[in-house]
Image (tube, rainbow, N blue to C red; front, top):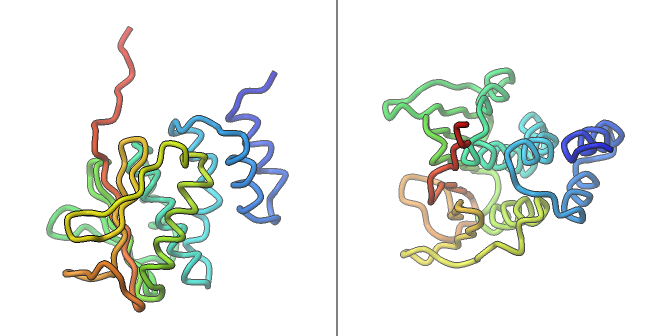
Length: 194
């Protein structure tokens, strides 16, 4: 009998060229647990969109990468350094990458990650983030709300996404920019030593 990760791998390989949406629908229907290996299997096709010409797909790929980062998955930044994205460490020791109109920033600890786009609005950014959460079968544990400034939040499994416009002083809603800030609200569980 095959394990969950092996089954997902077989499904993913059989769907190459048929679109990430079909794989995501299968993941949503199966209700797979949200541990890091399963998340990586499910999100890899989305992260691959960081090289797409469609700016909304680029944004979706970067949000998927951030979801993996705050879930404790190591090496996510390697995807960006192997592409045409420019990157480096800024003054706050954040590893940031930008390409055309999208920026993604990874903090050294898996507690925070952000994506900003100047090509899509906050409403579309919200729809993309919500869809990724739903497709990962996390919807039953999802809480939608607002932060202290009235900006939309989606919280699930100890992670909160805050959706705003882009920029240093973002507005909650913007037609010309979107940002998703993902933060871990509780520490990652460490495997028991035994």
